[in-house]
Image (cartoon, rainbow, N blue to C red; front, side, top):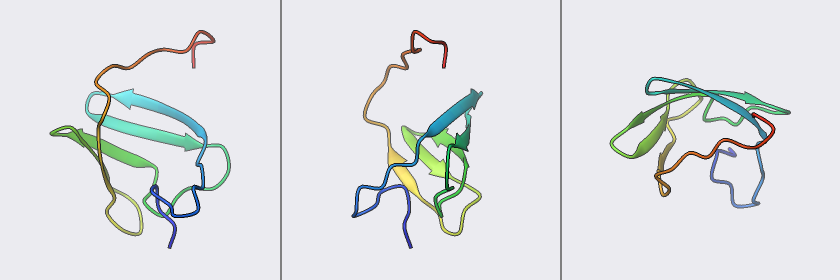
Length: 70
């Protein structure tokens, strides 16, 4: 099963919409097994709707908007 942290360095590209403490991912191609909805809690991103629970620690504390508005 391939999740967000994959041994083969698979990249799941796309966009994310942030609303309050929730992240809604719109992937360009395939959706990872961890799902496409997550919440932020205690400096951790927790995927909530996938085939298994994936948790990722947040290592950067600043969100930067790209020049093209994405």
